[in-house]
Image 1: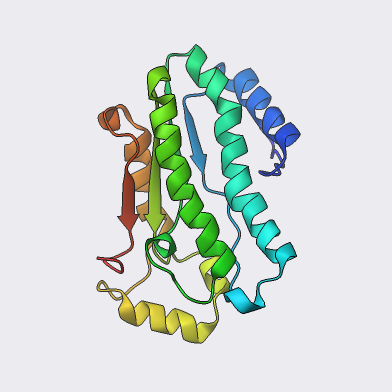
Image 2 (image 1 turned 90 degrees about the horizontal axis):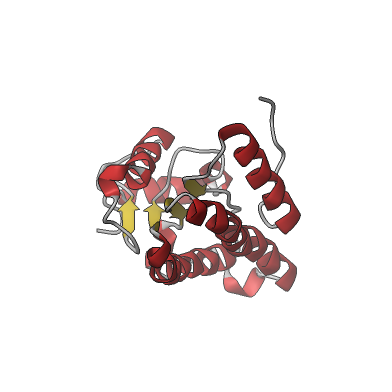
Length: 191
């Protein structure tokens, strides 16, 4: 038990997480790259320090996570990685320049890693959630949230449980032939 504090963008922190998992469970089969930060600034208001902050967590953190579990997954004959991109990475979603850039990068990283890691039987897929009812979504201005909700064909935001169900499928043996794929889960927002 206990809580393990982790800085996703720090290599040493990743090694602690991997060592802890190996000590507790003896192996690593799954990585869900779900940590992320939001930036609700348009291009012209995005300062380099803000851009770097978002990229450090969303892109570098995801890269370091995949890198940290590759060896342990190879040792047990494979594994499954799910990268959380975003429905915002399907368009040029306005007003979130750094966030959108980072999430587009994750789409490319998932496809490139899927190709590179297939020989080790490590699968890499990306999920592209729409607006999910979480604390991160609540960081958006209220008028933006109302506008987004009105654009969703289902007329509501998604739930963390709906995302978890998709992730559980993608890391299961039932998805053993799926790699390099992207799954929009957004109530039809980007249909």
